[in-house]
Length: 78
Image (tube, rainbow, N blue to C red; front, top):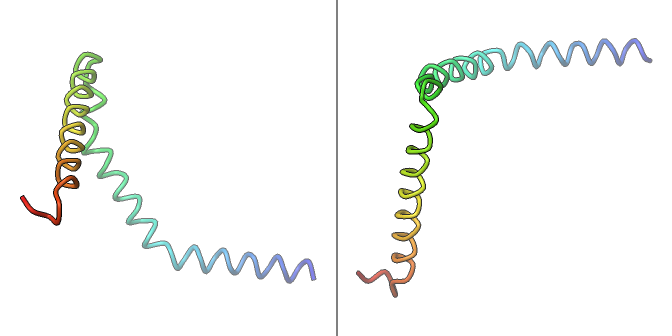
C-alpha cells in the first residue's frame, strides 16, 4: 500500500506540474517584468526615498479626505 500511495503522489505531482507549467511560466515572466520596471527604485538615495514617501503620504491623505467628503453628502447630491 505504501508503494501504491507513493506512485499516486508522484503521478499527482507530475500532472500538477504539467497542468500548471504555462501558468508558472507566465508568473515568472510577470516577476521579471516587475523587477525590470521597478529597478530604478533601487538606485534612489535615502533622501529621494523619504521625499517620495512624504509625497505619497500627502496623496493618500488627499484621497482619504475626498472620500470622506463624498461619503458625507446626503443621497449623492453635490
